[in-house]
Amino acid sequence: MYKIETHLHTRPVSFCAYLPPEEMVELHHRSSYDTIFVSDHFAINHFSRLGEIGWQEKTRMLYNSYLRAKKRGEELGMTVLFSPELTLKNNHYLLYNVDLDFLNSREDFFFLTIEEFHRYATEWGVSIIQAHPLRDGKCTPCPEFVIGYEVINSNPRHENFNDNVIALANERGLLITAGSDAHRIEDVDGAAVLSPFEIKSADDYLVLLRSGEAKLLLHGEIIG
Image 1: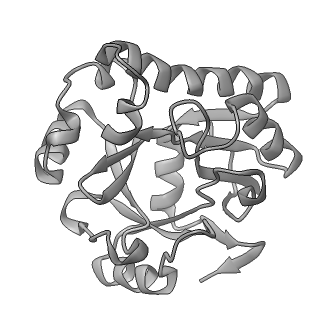
Image 2 (image 1 turned 90 degrees about the vertical axis):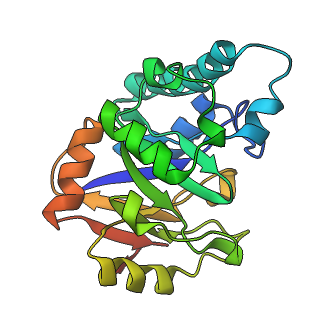
């Protein structure tokens, strides 16, 4: 089985993260991951902390963190993919099949409703999975506008109500996934997805989720 981390953060764009991209990759390599997704924050509060620079300079910083991780991953024989975590109001969304052209295609992303964003993302072939849909009682599930829920999130500094999210996903027939939401050394390997085949692209990952063959891990235990 191939081990996948679907949700991690690095400095400098994710100001809440503690580690640079290269170190985060190395930690996951030591924990036997084959594929990881870099999900740095695509959010107004994170972008505002990057200083008085233009939109394209900020998106380049976001994308460069992924490229730095990808380079180190290639050196270690790992696959590193990009899935920025968009924040709209209090909700968070992991985006798949996103590139720099999409990030630069407009500068008002953070002011869109999820309905507006979903319509626009669909035109670009971008898929959306909602991260931790019930976190801390502040996030609101949006099943109409996503293909799946992150039903397992192991970040220890939040209440994620994983069991309730699993039930909600099952009720709506949504895809389910798991992620560590790693920001610090101690967060690494909290959750994972196992695949019977290699994940080399975002499309591979979505095929896995739709196949029903994915196994979700929480602290090393298979869930569900």
